[in-house]
Length: 119
Image 1 (tube, rainbow, N blue to C red):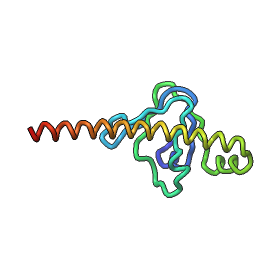
Image 2: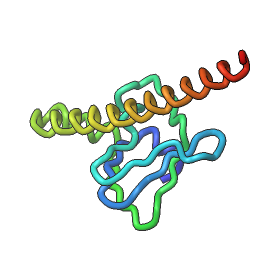
Image 3: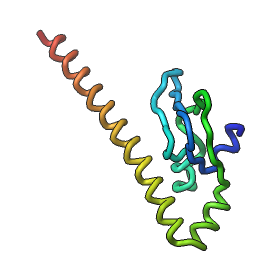
Image 4: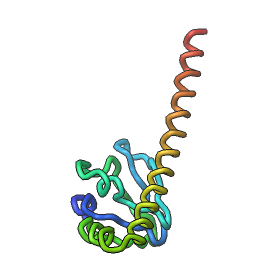
């Protein structure tokens, strides 16, 4: 898949790891089997793409579905739709917890640097 196609797809990691790379080229996150990639652009139709680049690890297997196919399933099968939304919520909640943890680490670092500067 090309980068421009990814914003129109919802992908389920079946096997392996997918790494998210930030603007500085550092690994900012990891998706593993069971996680979804593309949840943000699916849920937020105004989303213009990914904040991170995505790199597949060795032996990764993905199932990719177009947004239109996913929307059709959501309309036609309530049980599957609930499972898809639950998986999206789980993936996004883990990412939010990771990002909040990183933010707290930065806050502690900044506070300690300020304290050292004041002394």
